[in-house]
Image 1 (tube, rainbow, N blue to C red):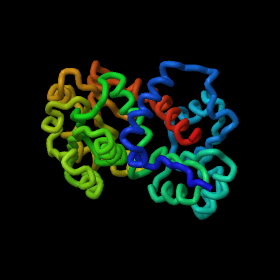
Image 2 (cartoon, rainbow, N blue to C red):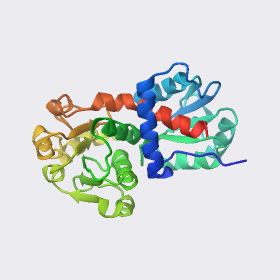
Image 3 (spheres, rainbow, N blue to C red):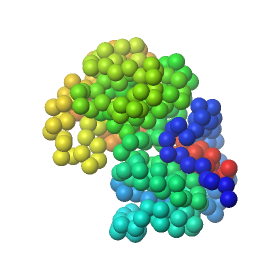
Image 4 (cartoon, rainbow, N blue to C red):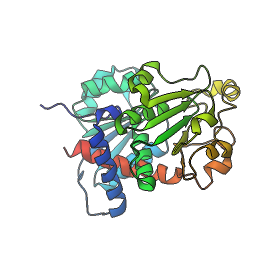
Length: 300
């Protein structure tokens, strides 16, 4: 039996495939054809260790749009939550569904699950990466400004899973990434090294934003880090995306945030609700980018 194709990281697709997927997502968004049901009768198992708004709705709606269905599974609903070995769960669940999406804490959970799954496994978010969000972000940029190759993107804030996925995107789509993080919150050193000179680190948000085409940020304390909130507020106080920061970027620069956002913390309200912001198109594109991804993996 052929091994299934998984989507754990942007590095699992070639740069040509990512660009084709983005264009396919744009086509699916524009066509909105209810008669196109390539996944009719197919089932996506969705395993959530972490709660979600956009991930659950977009995958469930995408499967429904394509004529298939999705099953929502939380730790309370499965033996995974009671300590069943991951390889056992993977083998059993994958024998009953056509693809699996996991949104989990530990990245190793997804990689081990994929290793033992007989169907495609999609990374819906881990502590290391959030590749599905990057597909949506890149689709949004392509729609508004064309290909991102050779452009300058600035990440401001925590060197978290979103930052790591932007590093992978810079490698795959050949853009320059500037990262501004406070001491102690830098991205994974090995991932930084893998990107070579495509990525530069900055101590100042304003300096990192100079000449940028896209500014991106995320919450200062992600899910599970709430107890660090006060500590992080002090560490990140100079890393809010303000209008001053945006003024250092190109006049037509875009602003993105994967949401949920805290206005007045990582981003000023006048920025996220202003003319540079494309956050709602970005959020909607989770649906279209993931439909293109489901088609790629499940119709192969």
